[in-house]
Length: 193
Image (cartoon, rainbow, N blue to C red; front, side, top):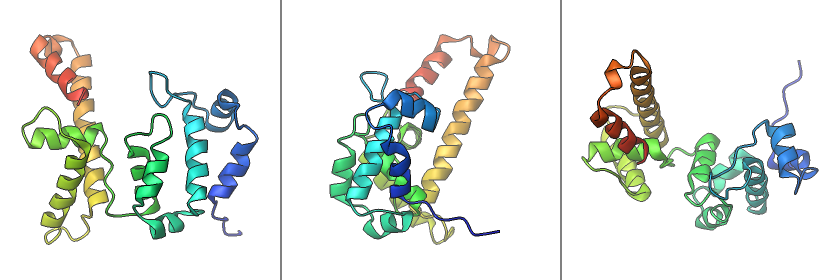
Protein backbone atom coordinates (compact mmCIF):
# COMPACT_ATOMS: atom_id res chain seq x y z
CA UNK A 1 0.00 0.00 0.00
CA UNK A 2 1.43 3.36 -1.04
CA UNK A 3 1.79 6.03 1.66
CA UNK A 4 -0.89 8.69 1.47
CA UNK A 5 0.17 12.08 0.13
CA UNK A 6 -0.05 14.94 2.59
CA UNK A 7 -2.57 17.47 1.37
CA UNK A 8 -1.70 21.14 1.11
CA UNK A 9 -3.63 24.39 1.12
CA UNK A 10 -3.12 24.46 -2.66
CA UNK A 11 -4.83 21.06 -2.92
CA UNK A 12 -7.79 22.40 -0.96
CA UNK A 13 -8.00 25.57 -3.03
CA UNK A 14 -7.84 23.52 -6.24
CA UNK A 15 -11.03 21.73 -5.15
CA UNK A 16 -12.74 24.90 -3.92
CA UNK A 17 -11.72 27.25 -6.76
CA UNK A 18 -14.34 25.97 -9.18
CA UNK A 19 -17.06 26.96 -6.68
CA UNK A 20 -15.75 30.47 -5.98
CA UNK A 21 -18.69 32.90 -5.70
CA UNK A 22 -21.12 29.95 -5.73
CA UNK A 23 -21.07 29.56 -1.95
CA UNK A 24 -24.36 27.70 -1.57
CA UNK A 25 -23.24 25.07 -4.06
CA UNK A 26 -19.81 24.81 -2.39
CA UNK A 27 -21.47 24.53 1.02
CA UNK A 28 -23.62 21.58 -0.07
CA UNK A 29 -21.39 19.74 -2.56
CA UNK A 30 -18.00 20.09 -0.87
CA UNK A 31 -18.68 20.59 2.83
CA UNK A 32 -22.21 19.26 3.31
CA UNK A 33 -22.75 22.22 5.62
CA UNK A 34 -24.77 25.30 4.74
CA UNK A 35 -24.38 27.03 8.10
CA UNK A 36 -23.38 30.66 8.37
CA UNK A 37 -20.56 32.17 10.42
CA UNK A 38 -23.13 34.22 12.31
CA UNK A 39 -26.90 34.10 12.61
CA UNK A 40 -26.97 37.83 11.81
CA UNK A 41 -25.60 38.67 8.36
CA UNK A 42 -22.95 35.95 8.45
CA UNK A 43 -21.45 34.45 5.32
CA UNK A 44 -21.57 30.73 4.52
CA UNK A 45 -18.94 28.80 6.45
CA UNK A 46 -17.86 27.42 3.08
CA UNK A 47 -17.00 30.93 1.90
CA UNK A 48 -15.19 31.61 5.17
CA UNK A 49 -13.16 28.40 4.71
CA UNK A 50 -12.26 29.42 1.15
CA UNK A 51 -11.21 32.91 2.23
CA UNK A 52 -9.28 31.48 5.19
CA UNK A 53 -7.37 29.13 2.87
CA UNK A 54 -6.60 31.98 0.44
CA UNK A 55 -5.23 34.16 3.26
CA UNK A 56 -3.18 31.33 4.73
CA UNK A 57 -1.71 30.66 1.29
CA UNK A 58 -0.83 34.36 0.88
CA UNK A 59 1.22 34.07 4.06
CA UNK A 60 3.23 31.19 2.58
CA UNK A 61 1.51 28.47 4.59
CA UNK A 62 1.16 25.32 2.52
CA UNK A 63 1.11 22.73 5.30
CA UNK A 64 0.67 22.52 9.07
CA UNK A 65 4.48 22.50 9.34
CA UNK A 66 4.55 25.91 7.64
CA UNK A 67 1.92 27.18 10.10
CA UNK A 68 4.10 26.01 12.98
CA UNK A 69 7.13 27.82 11.56
CA UNK A 70 5.17 31.06 11.15
CA UNK A 71 3.60 30.72 14.59
CA UNK A 72 1.48 33.47 16.11
CA UNK A 73 1.70 36.16 13.44
CA UNK A 74 -0.18 39.37 14.22
CA UNK A 75 -0.38 40.14 10.49
CA UNK A 76 -1.96 36.75 9.77
CA UNK A 77 -4.36 37.21 12.68
CA UNK A 78 -5.41 40.66 11.40
CA UNK A 79 -6.00 39.26 7.91
CA UNK A 80 -8.08 36.32 9.18
CA UNK A 81 -10.16 38.66 11.34
CA UNK A 82 -11.30 40.50 8.19
CA UNK A 83 -13.38 37.44 7.24
CA UNK A 84 -17.00 38.00 8.30
CA UNK A 85 -17.71 35.98 11.44
CA UNK A 86 -14.01 35.47 12.26
CA UNK A 87 -13.41 38.67 14.21
CA UNK A 88 -12.75 36.78 17.44
CA UNK A 89 -9.72 34.95 16.06
CA UNK A 90 -10.97 31.64 17.46
CA UNK A 91 -10.83 29.98 14.04
CA UNK A 92 -7.14 30.87 13.61
CA UNK A 93 -6.36 29.68 17.13
CA UNK A 94 -8.02 26.34 16.40
CA UNK A 95 -6.14 26.04 13.09
CA UNK A 96 -2.82 26.63 14.90
CA UNK A 97 -3.74 24.11 17.61
CA UNK A 98 -4.51 21.51 14.92
CA UNK A 99 -1.15 22.37 13.33
CA UNK A 100 0.48 21.44 16.64
CA UNK A 101 1.19 24.86 18.16
CA UNK A 102 1.28 24.12 21.89
CA UNK A 103 1.10 27.66 23.26
CA UNK A 104 -2.15 28.60 21.51
CA UNK A 105 -5.37 28.81 23.51
CA UNK A 106 -8.78 29.03 21.83
CA UNK A 107 -10.88 31.49 23.89
CA UNK A 108 -14.31 30.16 22.94
CA UNK A 109 -17.41 30.36 25.15
CA UNK A 110 -16.61 27.11 26.95
CA UNK A 111 -13.15 28.28 28.05
CA UNK A 112 -14.34 31.76 28.96
CA UNK A 113 -17.21 30.33 31.00
CA UNK A 114 -14.82 28.05 32.92
CA UNK A 115 -12.39 30.89 33.68
CA UNK A 116 -15.23 33.24 34.66
CA UNK A 117 -16.66 30.63 37.04
CA UNK A 118 -13.23 29.96 38.52
CA UNK A 119 -12.84 33.68 39.19
CA UNK A 120 -16.38 34.07 40.53
CA UNK A 121 -17.35 36.40 37.70
CA UNK A 122 -20.18 36.49 35.22
CA UNK A 123 -17.85 36.86 32.23
CA UNK A 124 -14.21 37.31 31.30
CA UNK A 125 -12.52 38.89 28.29
CA UNK A 126 -10.98 36.47 25.77
CA UNK A 127 -7.46 37.87 26.33
CA UNK A 128 -7.77 37.37 30.10
CA UNK A 129 -8.95 33.78 29.64
CA UNK A 130 -6.01 33.02 27.33
CA UNK A 131 -3.45 34.53 29.69
CA UNK A 132 -4.85 32.76 32.75
CA UNK A 133 -4.86 29.37 31.01
CA UNK A 134 -1.27 29.90 29.86
CA UNK A 135 -0.28 30.87 33.41
CA UNK A 136 -2.12 27.90 34.91
CA UNK A 137 -0.32 25.62 32.48
CA UNK A 138 3.05 26.93 33.70
CA UNK A 139 2.08 26.51 37.36
CA UNK A 140 0.86 22.94 36.77
CA UNK A 141 3.72 21.86 34.50
CA UNK A 142 6.08 20.64 37.27
CA UNK A 143 3.42 18.11 38.28
CA UNK A 144 2.07 17.51 34.76
CA UNK A 145 4.97 17.99 32.31
CA UNK A 146 2.84 17.50 29.18
CA UNK A 147 0.18 20.01 30.18
CA UNK A 148 0.97 22.71 27.62
CA UNK A 149 -1.59 25.52 27.15
CA UNK A 150 -3.32 23.91 24.16
CA UNK A 151 -3.76 20.63 26.06
CA UNK A 152 -5.09 22.40 29.17
CA UNK A 153 -7.51 24.37 26.99
CA UNK A 154 -8.75 21.12 25.45
CA UNK A 155 -9.23 19.54 28.90
CA UNK A 156 -11.23 22.58 30.01
CA UNK A 157 -13.28 22.53 26.80
CA UNK A 158 -14.18 18.86 27.28
CA UNK A 159 -15.04 19.43 30.93
CA UNK A 160 -17.31 22.39 30.18
CA UNK A 161 -18.97 20.60 27.30
CA UNK A 162 -19.68 17.69 29.63
CA UNK A 163 -21.14 20.04 32.23
CA UNK A 164 -23.47 21.53 29.64
CA UNK A 165 -24.57 18.05 28.52
CA UNK A 166 -25.20 16.97 32.13
CA UNK A 167 -27.42 19.98 32.73
CA UNK A 168 -29.19 19.52 29.41
CA UNK A 169 -29.83 15.81 30.12
CA UNK A 170 -31.06 16.60 33.61
CA UNK A 171 -33.46 19.22 32.25
CA UNK A 172 -34.70 16.91 29.51
CA UNK A 173 -35.28 14.08 31.98
CA UNK A 174 -38.53 13.78 33.89
CA UNK A 175 -39.11 17.55 34.01
CA UNK A 176 -39.20 17.84 37.81
CA UNK A 177 -35.46 18.44 38.01
CA UNK A 178 -35.61 21.56 35.89
CA UNK A 179 -38.79 23.09 37.16
CA UNK A 180 -37.31 26.02 39.07
CA UNK A 181 -36.88 29.26 37.23
CA UNK A 182 -33.66 29.87 39.19
CA UNK A 183 -32.03 26.78 37.68
CA UNK A 184 -33.20 27.71 34.19
CA UNK A 185 -31.89 31.26 34.67
CA UNK A 186 -28.55 29.85 35.94
CA UNK A 187 -28.26 27.77 32.76
CA UNK A 188 -29.23 30.71 30.56
CA UNK A 189 -26.58 32.94 32.18
CA UNK A 190 -23.83 30.40 31.69
CA UNK A 191 -24.68 29.69 28.08
CA UNK A 192 -24.52 33.37 27.17
CA UNK A 193 -21.02 33.97 28.57
